[in-house]
Length: 345
Image (cartoon, rainbow, N blue to C red; front, side, top):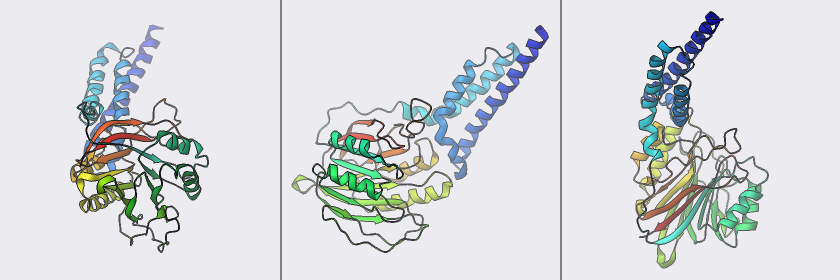
């Protein structure tokens, strides 16, 4: 009997060694993702590799005594590889200094194009009383429901709903002026559609831009002639990596033409703060990302929390942040991102 238990313990130790070696290999592959973009996909899941490493440490006690130190070393090395990527985001905090300027509330939400019951999302937006709303994956039926409920509080809007591969909406309490839409660059762009709604206008489509993301630009006019540049985007998935990298470069080029201090960029980036793709984008622009690991996707999973923070908000230097938080489940596969901020020209 003792011999059988010993063999079971050996088998368990071998399996644990294999699992921890695989975990360590994922950490190494993620670092190589800085040079090989396709391997950057590994980095999006780094918090979960940390959780797996901690579970590996807890799983050491049934292993054979002579194996425990090497196994602990494998788990420890794996955790050390993850820490520099995840810990700075995990401990980032909003400044507690006194906030000055005009208070604004921004909500960004991927509505999920296939969602047929948008009443919870529309109710949430109506009850939250935001000043600015950035929406992605908005269908024609979504747009009608939004107009019916939100027009009194958000009388100004621009959208590209009905345009191929661009189904974005910007809503505002403040008048909106210039707007422009661009579409996924590796697809064919349909001909422009004339505006039909004077309050919630359909944006004119720009010429095809290879490697572009779906994006929508608008300019809000506040009191005393102050203006805000509003930019919402929806990037493709992080694999193939080169497509998303081209989209990051496309967004950065558009941002160069906007006034940094008063620009807001928000949307579904399909990229996490631990990827080389998003980290590279962060250092290539002047705006500051204020979503420090706000997990937003997916809703309704097996775990009580969403798995990935892929919805991001960036602000120019004239903005200060009071709070960034995740909203409730409103029927989409994304949670809303709520940003309370102040604007001081």
